[in-house]
Length: 263
Image (cartoon, rainbow, N blue to C red; front, side, top):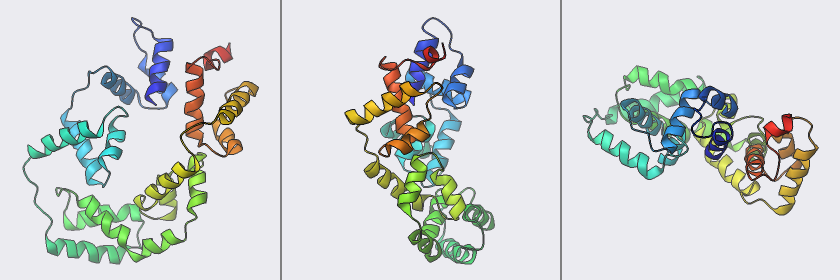
């Protein structure tokens, strides 16, 4: 993603031409503020703000790993930089009131009561409001752990065809978040298995034959190549990896750029 944005900016806005971030936003399908932020970070201009710290803390409280949280903030942010900054920030804040053993027991009871009766996406917020946990650190991950271990959701996981789900995610037909909502199941029960299967089914390394097929397909298209369709035809790479490879080949001059094809 970073290479794609940098390539677009270098091609259309070489120094000293000012960058049109609205055009970059439209090209990347990312908000203009996030494009500016990403570009500033690449140039070493990024500085942590209170809202950045709060967002990082909220992501961690939801149960995301440092690596996952870093990707949400910026594709250029390293795990070490995030963990160090967040630890310094949290150590400077007053210690929050801890969740008592009685409250943990009440969380377990409420999860048992609500599992299968309310959409899983609403259970965390409902329990938080009932127990007034809005100012307690890690309440989201605590409730999430109870949900992940609950027999109702464990049984639903056993009925999922993960090969089919991984294929649908890889070809752009759905996302883990959407699938979790449709199945009414915690998304983190799906995410790791989909990632592992995706890594096995769609290896990162491109073979010469795969590259040749991509080049042949792109050259045969009169309009913008459909990477979702090509991914299905190829069968060994996800649509997102095909899209990234196509951009790389254009950057290297192996394929004409999208602008040249329009001409």
